[in-house]
Length: 97
Image (tube, rainbow, N blue to C red):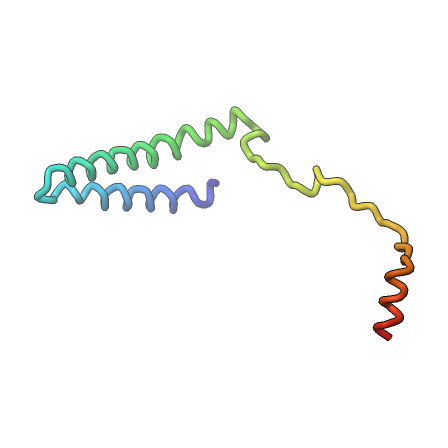
């Protein structure tokens, strides 16, 4: 997470200000929607991703990083012995030769 934090923050800020540019629209509704989205994105980028996510990762510990690796939970496959051939499959094998 530490390696990608700066990139994600910059991308969030760019997207927030892009949505905020809708304020310059002549339509009041479009400006309101752009402002609302911008405020939400700024909150998500600056507060949630910067403070709350690392805090939750610390509080939850290993439970934060789910799902766990599946190969640890899966049973080992059983090796079965050779299959018995039935009379019908022996006849089919004879026809193929």
